Length: 500
Ligand SMILES: [Zn+2]
Image 1 (cartoon, protein in one colour):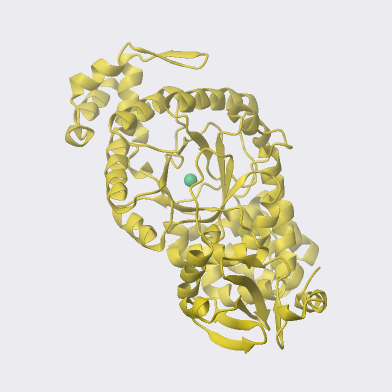
Image 2 (cartoon, helix red, strand yellow):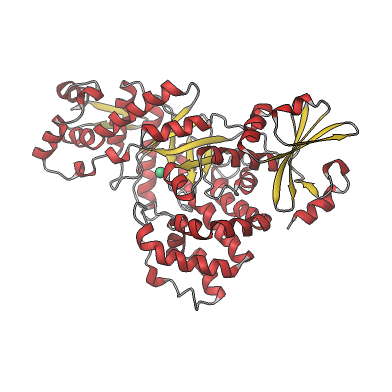
């Protein structure tokens, strides 16, 4: 375990890294054109340190300038303005397009996980999206899009990570959601039209279906009921080894289920295109109750293509259950068969990547997805890094962990709304009297994990300050846990783990 004291010991051989009680993180040195950048720690506070021969180079950073024998040293707070200046000086510390590379989204609700995430991804060849947060998460954690991006930048500097990272403005539902993330400089946008998906389309009677079909927003779909019918009904679609013939009923159910969602996606896409020049798009319809069939996927991809939307990845709602914080629940063979078909559709209409949402802890499907996608895949995780933070808290401050469990149990009935979880709180021992072993066990228990997973907003509201303090003091413990746990997610997708 390397604490700040150990860093100081290491750095003793490199005296320029030390100034009084300021210790640089050993991996953090990154060289720019006329300056060297380091992340350092002074007591509990982190600092950006910039060294340069010329004082002018330092002018774009805010902080305290010190004259040294061979140049200047500037000690800068980790402010948004300094993060912007740093990204300008070192573009590799700013977000990049991910493209079709195999990638993993590493959401970080606390803004402290990036160094651990980088250690998990280093050497795997899987491209990390280090800044990733949904608008729902930002409102629950009280973070801004700027903070999310800045924390990724600081974490990348701390680890000296110059291989690039993505920034995903996740689950955007409205035009307003888009604007706030555009201002911050995100480059990947995940549009989520799930609220417009009509889940009743799969089961309603044919009469209702036809009425609903006629009532679709035809203006916005830039089509007419007869024209769209002609495009799909009775037509066969081939993708890879698969052929689908869409019957009238299959077509109508697909159109009613996704028609409004397509219109909303097009509206958000055009709004986004007006605002940003270089960006990439993910489309997610994963948060619906019924799985997306390959035929529905064909309909969505074909309609979005007709309406000139371009995207890099798409998240269908896969078969089985993707509950928060726990492994896949469902038939693995069926998952493989369906994934293979969705992949064929993605190759035909793209190629684009299939994105696996709620991807944390779905260990049983990773080898399948890696194999079937041949690397054309994005795995999205978020909550699991928060659970690892709680695991670190248990090690560092078990009493705080006990309080967190108690609060989580109290808030679970309200906080579980909008999340796909089925945990039963009565299966969790009373935190007031539970032994430490029993408390620790909650982090590996189905019920415990889900309850802790969805109550982060309430927990952060009450214990956020204290929790961050504990994690900052014991950051190496947290990084170690992230490296091990996220590593298990990423390795199956790396070339060595069997992925492409
Ligand atoms: Zn999702």
